[in-house]
Image (tube, one colour):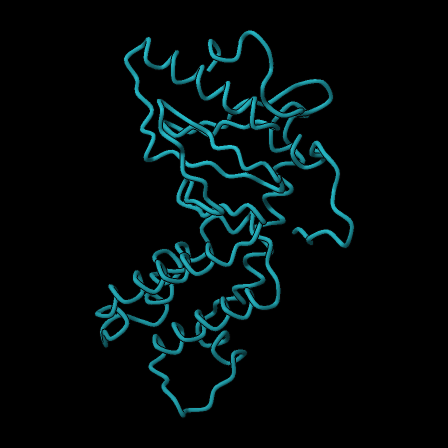
Length: 241
């Protein structure tokens, strides 16, 4: 990446006077540009430099996401048009062009439900104490459900889905079935588990405190007060956490 971007910046304005060209994790790389021309040039250069050191970029596994642009020009890598996607999975989380996390929430609930189902023998056990079952639920199910919750932008619909899923799980652990009447407050008291929406909010606040304590040159700290290039459309903007 240093060789591919050493001649001039092709990324986006970042911080007071810098630019950011890419976001990397292990062998995953996300190229970032503010124009189609810059992105195509950067893609060509990265592909060319990579081949010089024996690396080949897999075109069929590469995706393009365009955020609030009318450009219809395709991005090409090795004579192959890259697929354009409105959302894709990156570092085990779904990222959407419009900032919507409905697909991410559905995926999280599905993975957590699968983890819960695979532990049916634990929930049915008459040997294990309720405290033990609840701790297993926290570590093996709730942790899957709230993965990356620090960055979620939730609303009442999403919060209702989270509460509904966890309520069904906890009632199953308590062996309470319909039509036995029991309130969510009573379920929380019997299991000792706090409201999952409050847990997600606490995680967000802890992450915010962590970011505020970072140095001013760290990317999360810069992103907190970053103003994107371009002009925002008229109307009320989307709320963020």
